[in-house]
Image 1 (cartoon, helix red, strand yellow):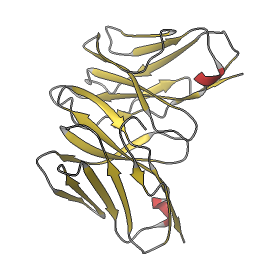
Image 2 (image 1 turned 30 degrees about the vertical axis):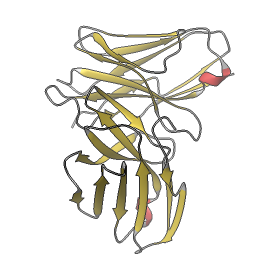
Image 3 (image 1 turned 135 degrees about the vertical axis):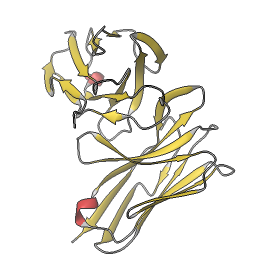
Length: 111
Length: 114
């Protein structure tokens, strides 16, 4: 990956359980974003956390950011089968607005 | 709400042929980004345009070129296609004044080079 690693690479959980995905990055950032991708389809923006924020919530999503460790985590609570997808973190630097993606986590939620 | 439109959705070309991918951003969005996603890979930034000028360049091969037109749509031109160019090509757009914020992705063009 051009940015860093996400772990786990794949995650299989039962519906109703929580799913946690982690992301590490290499450079200083303006913000970090999480995107979701259903198989072979477009990317959908989920949540954005700025470099001066430590935690953010949106519905069943909770994102944390630790700039000292250059890492972020995405927690999906009370997962549903429809949450099955690949999840990517992407960073934006101050000097450039392009998204630099991590390697993604494939989440399978079993009904 | 209007979304990013990409055409064609699927494209099959032979080696050494050329391909043109088109992207129509969300109305009033002034920045367009192109990304390439190989099979099982993360998306990789290729190039971006702001107000019809190239604003950033990533790992785009010299065989590829792109531009943004006066109506803000963008085209990615790919020549001398290679098997390794087979990938999903995404276009994304972002609104003015907050370019560091979320990008809105199109459904992608799946290019297969045989």
